[in-house]
Length: 353
Image (cartoon, rainbow, N blue to C red; front, side, top):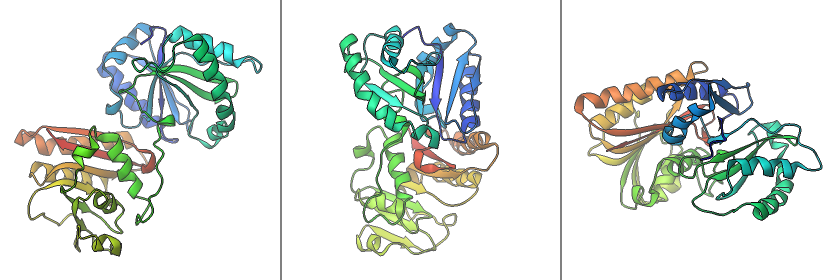
């Protein structure tokens, strides 16, 4: 990682800049790094600036993108290049890039995930091949061991130039996986579980292999159950509401018409998934109880966040789950992420060690 970088650029969902800023300030402080954040409402990104450039070193070494809830992308960068000359943007941006590194694994051109940012997409699409050609002539591109080079456009005349580290950043442009609603899926909520699998699971084929068992709490109409069934996982779908008939015809689904908070499994299952419209603390307590009692080995669950103190609510939910596991000495990997398909929600993932 280049020593020239002096700040962090984090993408987030528009409207969640405050939560993203609070989180990076807390994580940086825990690593002994003080600094300030630049965060404009509805900008869809946050910039963290350490008090001194040298203070960025602990973050380069120890800050893990996977541990951040509200960040979609993590980039080490410098002050943005402003007032780019219309006739020669490429030269200025190339000089910025070469100051960071002479080798890159790939080139990524992004813009804020806002209506204003999306209006830059046509310009970015046309500029990308021109800049890539110039970059290939002056640096080494497609080096798998090197960082990614990012141009994050604020306007057609201003951009951040920075680096992301494969394995410690999002692999997707804008930090957003491109998922299409599958034909036959009962609801769009199916995309939330698909994205969660792609985000949290290091080895999806092994973790979701055919023949496993699952319980889906709050299943109707079956969007999350559908994701399990397509992987040939035997699923108990728990909901008083109706399920898509095709799921019942699969032979892999048992529909239990009861309240998700009252349901008790006849025997432990591999997976618990839960997308119920309920207070987040109550969902967290439920998931913690399932893990503590050994009713499941893995869990993915959604937390519907309140309008205020959303970051604090996620931390509270984390504490509720940990409090149920700690007395029994149960070790658990616990992570939270605001996924693209979550909107005003956060998805949690827990797996027993």
